[in-house]
Length: 226
Image (cartoon, rainbow, N blue to C red; front, side, top):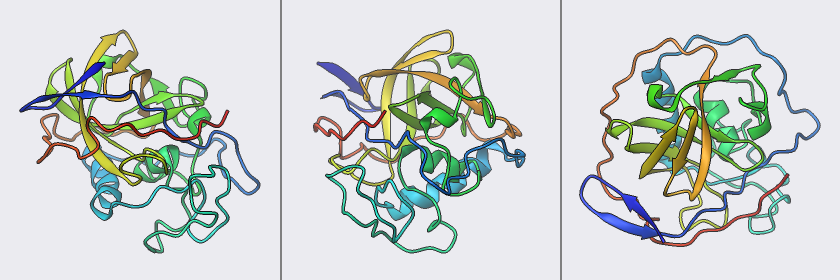
């Protein structure tokens, strides 16, 4: 069993199979877009809104049919906010919101390394707050900051309806870096480090989570859609 590291303790964790939409639906705006300049601090601030609200996972915009994952409600019913409502609140919709991309948001295949219209690949050791880690066709998470440079980091994610925490939340994990490839122990998977095309720098690399994530050590599985 892999080990999940936090600043204060190590906990066993079962590998996550993330539930993220990867197929486009009619009306999705997922093409090339002009990048809005955002600092790392601005990206984290936008993401923090969903984390603070514990915004429920949905693979559709709020109030719309959400039948892709049978473990989700057939209609997306979550906290209403006029800015958030047009976005899917799945893993890739979360990154799209955080990066101020058009609603309903790219899917995992709409980000680097699969698609470089809004992002590009970087070295894992160069990750800064506001960057992301993507596994196209599977899952994407937001990088929040280092606990220990190059080995333990903080993240935000929307994990899936079947997760023990089926909403936007924070976690801390050990990582192993090989070039642009980053293995995240908590996820039990390897991702590619990527950066938003409009990234303007900034943001504190020393962001620390205030508490241990409640999902640690709990199995949570969801539907993969390819």
